[in-house]
Amino acid sequence: MKKIIVLIIFVLVYHYSYAGFPIGRGKYLLVPSYNLYMAKGYWDGNGNYFAYSNGGRFASHFFGLYGGIGIGERLDFVGNVSYVIQRKQETGLLQSNASLGDATFGLSYLLNTFDYTKFLTVTGSLIVPLYTNNINKIPFTGFQQVGGEVKMTYSGSNGERYSNTYFDINVGVRQFFSPEGPTQLFGDALLGIPLDTDNKLTFQLATVKSTSTQTLFNPNNLFLNRQFSFFRITAGYGRRIGQHHQLFLSIFSDVSGRNTGKGGGGAISIVAEL
Image (cartoon, rainbow, N blue to C red; front, side, top):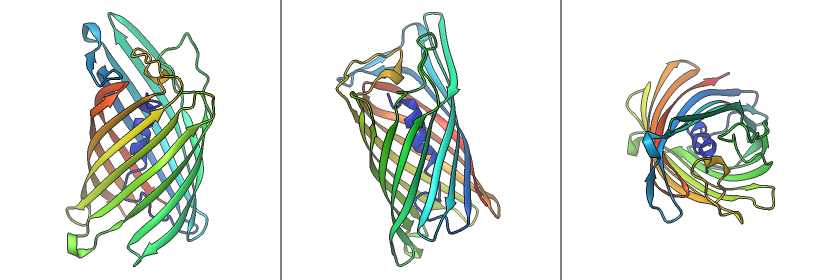
């Protein structure tokens, strides 16, 4: 699925008030996060919903550490490592698996600024699995494939005219280097609304469409699925807790999808400027 849920959750890690903004030469950014995803059912290839039998459910706990280093005024090095715990329970049977997840490493380059309030950025990343799937440990952690990603980001502030709201828009493609792929197109848009100098609200829409020559769908091992799509909404709250730290909380829910789990969850993270 979204690596399936790993990538669903992975999207969240990048959407704080600094998403798309240059870090700055010689500066650092660290974002530790915890994300919980739970699904009690799934959508099939036609978008029909089915609940897991006997109150079954899928849960994924995702611990991530995102970091960035300002190499220059326009160029940043960015990366992410993760640890994933997954559990699938149905008909009295509990299956669980815990391991390191996928790591990403890449470069983000500022293409242009518009009145120094809006930024256009391109980011290229390499995806490296830090795990080996074991048939005796299900659900699987991910695709266990090296991949690449290219993403365009347009972000900035709307100024006093719109009460200093800010936005972050991403579109990109992710390709896994195996005969069956998959190829994933993704896009998302976030709006941030400051309540005062220390507090803010965020709202986000996100979608992913994954295509592959492997079209089989296994609802009991979601991370095996390579052809799927979904649409989700997220609401969040952010608070500055110091001169260089911000705390973010969010909740999210799947709205529609095909060959993917139907669920929701929440996330907590801290953005630290160093």
